Length: 287
Figure 1 (tube, rainbow, N blue to C red):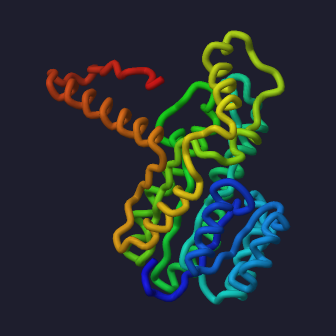
Figure 2 (cartoon, rainbow, N blue to C red; figure 1 turned 90 degrees about the horizontal axis):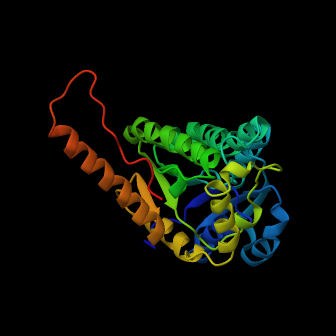
């Protein structure tokens, strides 16, 4: 880490998984953290270890008043916030037809609107200080659709969309935005994913196979959360951070495949005469 003054981080979903790993790494390297979670008591060991450098707060990101309260306590305790990490989220999995409308809405309430509400609650402060870095945790499912992950992926596509726009809006104000796109990491994510109570047999070979793979991979994912946390620290330290940070070999391969297909498709399109009714048959799947 550089010799600059210790930074103040505001991390949502910090009690487990990638959020917990990042909280630990940030504290180990000398910065301070406002760590929010639905169950902040899970952070008691870190509070005892790091004292007043860690403020653990309860937060359900689907509750606007709770967000405003957490931000108020953060600013009262530390005076400012340098880095916001929108990590809180979960996954609804199952074929698109299988997922109920209430489950879809709740997925978006947390993964999209929750992150947006937290960001907007802190933006007035970041604008006043003319500095700050926002890291929005997306997924490889935020840039390519997978069977069985349509609703979860849609929430991450939405997160990436407004993050791209926000990055352009706040760059002149000294605020940076980075979209973090992790692949499969050894976190509790697969163990707490939500799936439909009733499934449709017709989707057994597509969505069903994805669900089976996710459960089989639980605890055996190739990605190391501590390495992911270290990579995010490096991005925050960088004077010109990227808009996107792809984490994990699997996510990198998927991202390269998407770019390669787009490049080939564009090359084919440009080599053909263009007509108003022209259409290009793109590869329907990367699986």
